[in-house]
Figure 1 (cartoon, rainbow, N blue to C red):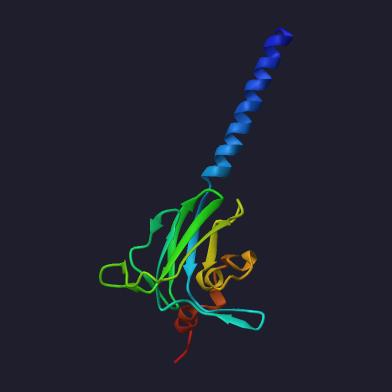
Figure 2: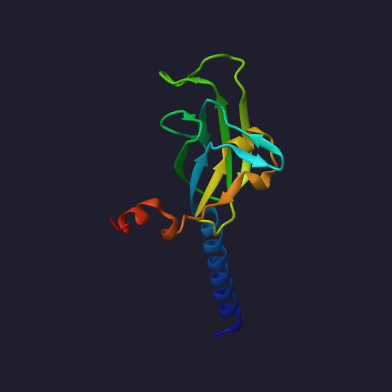
Length: 154
């Protein structure tokens, strides 16, 4: 094998490795849990609107989100755009008034986070970016109320 063909093969392999890393980074799927529960940051409590339409990367939820709700959405890639419109008519999902507040923000999700919680009140309250996206940690089995009920003695 000549040195020229060896260099060509090495370049092809390096190109394939770079392409696969790029495709992994841009195509990595994430599960977003959109959360409207009130958030306390420092001494300030941020609450959500009574009703709001939320869309991420153009994917709109089936129904408007109210207070203390959580919705799940699957997206891919590291960078996402969220659009939140407040006070909607729940019958036909149209804006009630032209003076409604519309918030558009962009956020990043780290590559190796599978599930994250996106806090809608933190975005609406102009909180720092590190409060918008929080890693999701499921509750432990010992703390689940259903598990406790199954093992109670009469």
